[in-house]
Length: 363
Length: 222
Image 1: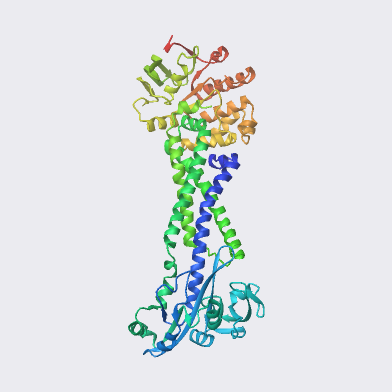
Image 2: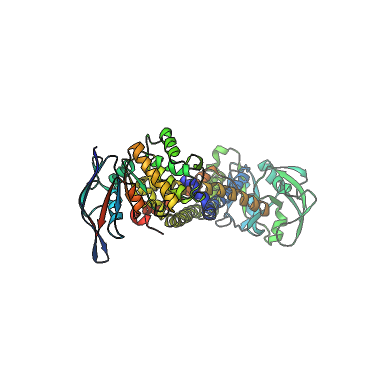
């Protein structure tokens, strides 16, 4: 063992382990939060993309990322059918409700025939919801021990019977009849939005304009734009992730700075010996930086492992989805290594500038 | 014999609070290549200060030091470090080995710091044989006796063929038996490799191993 860097780390296993865990914490935080945020938004986007309608007709404020209200009158269903260029329409109530300790889940009330016909959704097992206490679920939900015939508490205390399983995934995983959800929410003749499918997709902008002119005061959106900006539509998500990244970098840098500061104080005499042996400032800084980088690298590995374990555990315990992102892994790696290097720089520079005679006399 | 080290009128004054404390008061010395010199004198007479000045660990308040043709006093801090790296080997009273490294690791570290061309296996083998350390290379310092540790420190000091070895009371922490062994090693290094050595000592027996003794008192050579 003739590497000063490795032997120093091995010589002080507890402090090395704490430093590694400190870096790992920052890395794991970045990976976990970004993984969950991207997992959720990608899942939503994937489910939203299985919608064939080109236009979403709603009212301002009725549909947000995690909230909704049933304030669109279903009278528009018939009115929209009369707009030139419209092929079909189907009303949907989307309702968000708390799920588990951390999650938010959603259920949709749909007119099954028009909804499934418009979006090419098919029942792969069982049958479509017919009575007010029946629901259909997608295959992901069914795989979580919810077979056809079982009962499910969707929201509130009422039990719903799983009548069938549908595919592909689209919107909320749980769907019931529009009437059932209207009753449950005490919102008769209301929905959250209306999907509009046009005869000629290349004319969707013109049709949207016609709808807007015919029914001013409502909100007309092209689904391709809504689904493309799901991640951006989560209020403050980007800022939150950036703040998280900066915090993680600061945590990593502080942990390494503290560890290296303590190490250098302990090793003052050794630094004096290095100087007596003719080690340059750059050499001393390089040795300390290498040690910090090795600790940071080990912290990265532990951090990735922690994030993967935590993501898996959270996914199992809740409905939240963790998605490992290579882009964010690179960011986390850069944070861990850069934070470590920067954190070690001040103690390293301090060590390199120690007076050799005083350092040699250090007890 | 060529002059390997020349110090002219060296003065060193420490500032302690608001008081100037003179440690060296105009010391001149010339050392020839291959000389083994002992520096003796009472505590506080300036021996260690002089050794640190000659090794470039301190800068003199006044005076000039030339080592192997290079002016140490005119050099920048980086240049002084470079001269120390290439021309000086230090041996300390407290051995000052790296406790986390094996004996071999300590030697390799010195070679790495020295840089290009330093890794000379023949030289290392010969030194280890002479210092009887061949079977101790995989031991860490705490697994070695004091005498063995000091021999490793000596090997580390000379492995890169320095122009001068500066030793600060190398037998000060050793019993008489180990002192004798270490002094014998110093003599052998001097005889076989023509190694120039400047050694501070309080020990008259150690001084007996030297070719020339410099006596110091109150910052002067007497």
